[in-house]
Length: 331
Image (cartoon, rainbow, N blue to C red):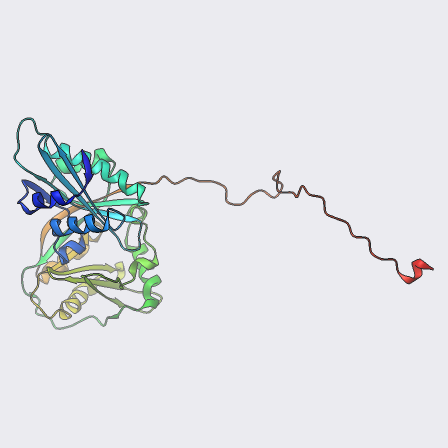
């Protein structure tokens, strides 16, 4: 039986899971995921678009699935899957339990007006990927997670002349994103200019961003997410400005003042940025495949009605008014 989390499930979540899979997003790299605390929030506030926790308890099997919403967007990220308890021959496999949980999670998300669900899976985990494929998820790109594990081997001091992002830069950043990202990625992510807004209330993750170039024609965009677990950089750069990658990354590293882990996210269509990043001390620590599932189906229909369409004419006759006779007519 699949149900929402209850107070009785919290004791099971305190124990170490038999098998778990954390699907790391940029936010989870900066702020570590705590399944028990997330489940408690879901129980108190209720399962809705912002967060969702589902539990499957059947024939001695106990499994958990959690999804986190994106603020201001009709979207959710599947972030955690786990199974607890002892494994036996009568108990369904972990992947079978997860399949049923994901199927129910997608249905509940659609009921809460969530239009898209995302998942970032380890690229080498073929069994888990097959489960998501059967539920209806489709891959749209890969990305690499790089960790700063060494010093700046170039020992350079030159920094890119970047400036802090402002509100007037939103459309220019979105235009830069449209230049860099392939059409398949843009169709899967459905971003708009408001996506690049930095301010998010009640968030434990701090967001900063810098841009390079004139207001209407940016050459690069560097974003930083900072949390208790580390710092996460993401980069957009125009193809004709790739020689400035090292200076841009060095500028971002100069903004850090603590020793928390530093990560850099690069996607497969940014392969030419890997070598400059590795010269600065970044090393690959993981590869992910990004999946998306749409819960809505686009329907095309005519917006403008034909001018001669039957039924648009008024059916009530217009009342005629008789003007009073003039002086000449009376004579």
